[in-house]
Image 1 (cartoon, rainbow, N blue to C red):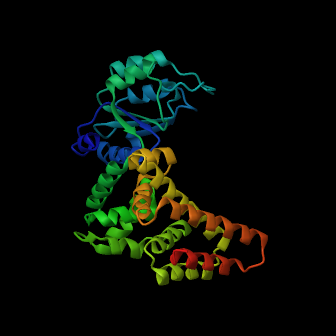
Image 2 (image 1 turned 90 degrees about the vertical axis):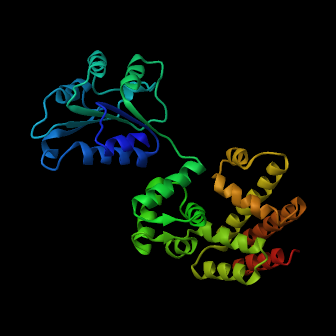
Length: 338
């Protein structure tokens, strides 16, 4: 991001607007500003933060207009600037918006003022919003799409002085999801494991990233798709040993096969994987994997599997057969293609 490059080069804008719902991106820029605008000697005197749900904006402006002490720059952070949005304000305080308009048009050259607005949208019709967008350097922190997410992972790996291979990126996304905070924590762990200038490969990710029940069931389903009977049953037995409820495991298996069927139907009608992901409201990477699995079955085979799962579910709920045995028999039935 150019905003980060400018901050690292100590080329600061007097006004920043960081808005959106991706908290990690906003916090990352905030931390970089604190590290580069302030010196260790001046931080105590030249850093201020205000919650605009509690404090009138003019108080923050008065602070911003006061010369820095023991340093060249001041950093003033303003949280919750709800006046940039269309939200009906039930404010405890009243803001002097005219004073803010005047400051935005002629900001103090020795102060870096940062508005942090963790809102999905701003009200572009408002004069104050237009003004801040005209004068501020802006970060719109919105969720990243798959190419952006992969690029971000490569950049973070490089930041931690390592490289990461493409299969490792895909496995990391599958095991961790797309939360940037979690991804960064896992990348720190992976980077420490391979060491400086090391390469993070797929096996390293599989060895170090813990799997959720859902991810274990995906691996189980993948083994079923590939007709790897021993591996599929091994994963299932491990889940039972971990006291996972068979009915919950069955529910997740059902969800995975429903997704495979839905993706097969949608892609068969000409929908792109990205469009299918949007319609099904699942991560594009899950759709990509489901599309690969779907090629191993006809639509009729998938319907039959889903019906068999429904029958097994009914047996589990009506009793008469040990639950773990019932799911095991179902898996054997699917593995044998019956």
